[in-house]
Image: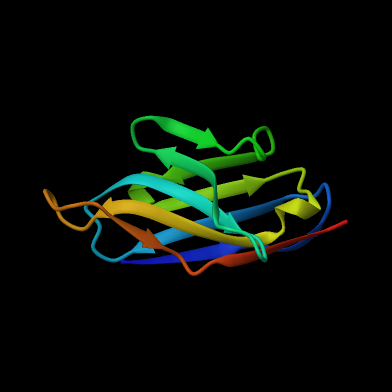
Length: 120
């Protein structure tokens, strides 16, 4: 299984960017799809989560500005980021908790990361 992230780039404060992440390979079912981020010198932190049964959840620092959505049939997760701030600058990673065969165990898979830079 491979996760490929798209989007990112550079934008001015107050602007918007969209990210997407597609999982390919043998996938039976996906339980959660996440976006994490890691700023220089900081730990990786959860930004938003899509859960197959529980819906979506967000870190407080992005609530009202970011929206996570998913196309489960297409094994794709999106992150729409609005009202971006300089402190949103980070490498953004997608992650999925999925299983590759019916009845198998779920494992975590990660994308390669995509850079988001917000200038003031």
